[in-house]
Length: 493
Image 1 (tube, rainbow, N blue to C red):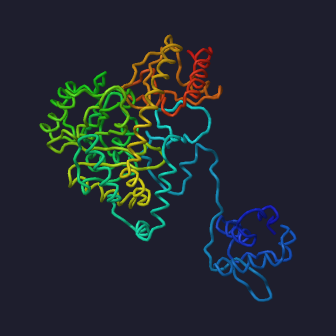
Image 2: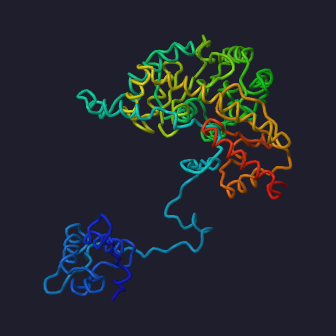
Image 3: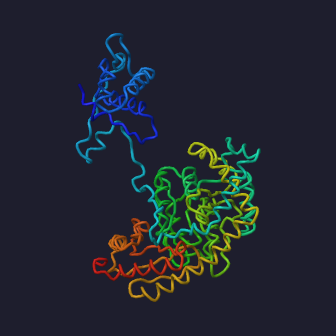
């Protein structure tokens, strides 16, 4: 007889009833090959004594096994594993982790080798992040009130049904109005797609634009996840230098003589990772090149709303009269990252195709949430949130940069960013950023290691230090811990 006392374990505190626990564990023994067709199950009396449960509970478990087709009762003989079941071989575990792939049950190809699963930032400890909003400032309570209010109304029940793949028409209209007021971008509701954040927009655009062997121009320094998205589509990256005026469009123009491209990906406001802003002259020239060479411009404008020292330049999409620009924005980056809502606009037929593709990935977003955000735009709550956040983030940026200047001027240099939520900091060569990150964590501070900003063409000893999510007291403490870590001998080469 099998060692049922160790094989069948019950948890009296679990939400699952005891007889179902027993039933499920017998099924596991059958499916993993430990028990075979026609094998006898122990009597209810024997099993109840072995595992310490009521005999009636065992009977109920056996009845469930029979009803599900895993076992059969033979009169005057007992309960047996169903004889008609196929014989299953006993599972063998891989000998080691190195053998995991060869021993897997099926063949598959990892086309995402350059992209790692997203790291969780839902920790409660002190952190200097990559440049994210302070979720404590977001009027989440108001948003949730609107969400509940809509869900309780008669018409709100309709939003629980399938809706348009393009997203809530109400939210599309609200964002359209907001873009017109703040960015001079006139776009119809039909020509807008609501996405799960800017990354979905980048993915959809890349899948529609790029074929294997195509080229897409990107910054020498660039948003790493976008690079991997384009590579996944099969495209080759044409690296273009980025300086204090953004992407070097003159360099791009020369490259176009010998290389045909399908698209250019740019972050004209607060380039990631370096935070620089693209000049007006380069924006206009890029639009001219796009028209002449018939390539698309993917404009990622994820944090347009946060500009501190002067009025931000209009997006390229606002001055594009040839429909070369695919414009991508995000509410997630300006409100709360976990609330995945963004948008994409572009030529009408392109947006229709993007909506069709989105249908294959994720039928639609959370319509109730989208409707709640629409109300927040209509009532002015979103605009009030942006104004309040802008004022607070500017104060935090100023204090953050003051501390960097006074306490770190011998180990790093930086330029005060005009906008955005992070400072691009270049460390002296003696500072090992990977070791710095590890040592800082030991000291109670999470900080990046600079790897996200690096690629095959860009390996500066630098990283983004986010200031927006830190209150003044937290900021002082975080930078004090960072300074302490920098001064530790083992944080340097």
